[in-house]
Length: 295
Image (cartoon, rainbow, N blue to C red):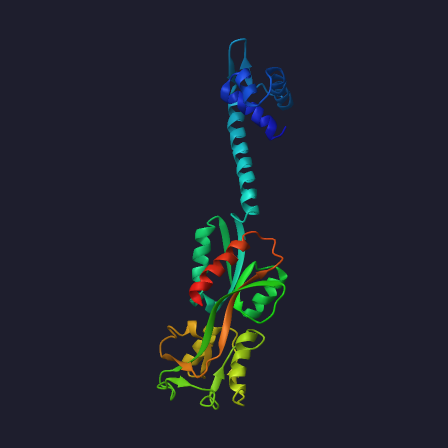
C-alpha cells in the first residue's frame, strides 16, 4: 500500500458513497470498488460495512481513517517543505561572523533576514577571521561577515562597511587628552594586537600604519579576541588599535581617540560561489540592501 491507496480509502470514508468517491478520484465506480476491496484484502481487515443502500465505517475503519488523515497530512507537509527548502524559503543557514561585527552590521543583517525568511533556521557562529576563511572553504559556513583579505575568486563578496581603527587606552594615559594620535607618538608604547594568524587583515593594517613612518610597533601581547584585548588595556598593560565599532562604549576606565590618517578596513559579507544552499541568495541580497545605508 502507498499514499495513493490511502487517498482511495479516504475518499470513500469521507463520502460514504462509492459513486461520489470514485468521481472524486477521477475513476469509474467498478475499478474504484476493486481498489477498496484490494485495500481490505491487503490489510486483512474489513473497513466498511456496506449493503445495497448504505456504506458505513467499521470501528477498524474509523481508526484507520484517523491514522490515514495524519499520515497524509504529514506527507503533504513534507511535500510543501521540500519545495520551500529548494526555493530558500525554509531550511537552515550557518552564518559566521567576527565577534566585533556583533557591535555593527550583524544585528541588522540577522533581523532583516529573520523577517524575510522566518522559516529558515539561522545558526550563528562567532569566529576569528582566519577560522571564518577556513570554514567558508570547507563548506561548514554558508555565509560570513569578515574583513576583506583581498581577491577571493571562490567567494561572492558584498562590501558592507568601511571601518577605521581607533586607539583605546586608560583614561589616565598621557595621550588621553589628545584629539588625534599618530604612529610617531606611539613609537615607545606597548601595543596589544591580535596575531596575524588570527586576523591577518587587521594585523597587516596595524603593521602598515607604523611601517609607513619607519616604525616597528612594540607589540607585547597577542590575544586572539578583541574583547580580551580591551580587557588587557583596561588593566594598564598597553594600548590597542581596534575597530571603531568597539569604541562606542570601550568600558569603565577606558577612552578611545582618533588616529591620524587612521587605517581603514573593509568589512564584507561572503559566501562560496558554489554554494548549494538556496537560502544564501536572499542573505546576500539583504547585504546589498544595507550596504547603501552603511557605506
